[in-house]
Amino acid sequence: MVYDVDALLNHVNRIRKEIGHEEVNIDIKEVLYDKDTNEMWIITNDRPDKSAIIGKGGWVVGRLREELQIESIHVESYSDFLQKEYRMKLSLDRLNSFVNDNELDYGVFLALNNLIDILKIKLDNLYSFNFHKYFKDLDESPYNYFEAEKPVAIVALSGGTDSSFSLILAKKLGFNPIAITVDPGTIVLPKQFKQNIDKLVEDLDVPHEYIEVDYTDLVEESFTGRFHPCGRCSKIIEDTLYKYALENDIPIVIFGDMLATGSQCITEQVCNFDENSENEPTDVGNKVNKNKIIRLN
Figure (cartoon, rainbow, N blue to C red):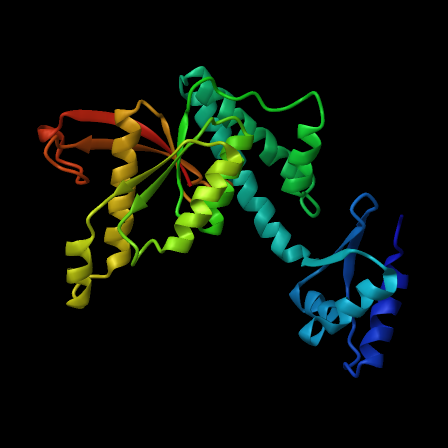
């Protein structure tokens, strides 16, 4: 079904008038409709146009959805998509360069190319790409991403949205991941987070480990007001995961949103750990293990 932009604008303006909103000039760049999901995407030129279509409290777009009998209406501004598109292209260039410039294990090569593939598809369907629908269609087709024979990535799983989604993507894209949760205790990692983590890894059939760490010094130092805990906390988590990856011959560590965009989406981390230290990298002259970890952000 094709929706005429002018007709849609008249519809929006009528609703705005009926509910007492001021009259404004609204620019719509494009309207997309997916009949399979009964969803509409309204792409405006800029954010003020987006706000005008949504209306105060979402009343305008809510009425529009009801009157058109559409399951869901997404209103987005083209200016926001320009930034997303630019950063995803940076990611794609960086990933392609990394794959082409390095001799990679076949499993790593396969998984990273799967990531490149889905980025290309997302760029080609910038407005309306839906991960859930994409993977559902793949699962129902004879074509799917091949999975590496052995784990090529560990995912730092905190139980939050970004790390959970990263684990799902890593599984779907063939990284054959292991999920690792750094556990400093219930103050930092509450029971309900652990319940979410346990359910997710069970549903995905992904191996998972909790690694306990001692945050006593970090907490005590933060109470003095001399140090901000976030940087030190991140370093402990990162070093714990890097060390696990090196000890288990796993080349990739994934942090946060695996589809993070930009030129830093993939980097190489040189890790030098002293044999008597849990988490602290050492000087090059006092190392027992020097290796590179591929970091996906």
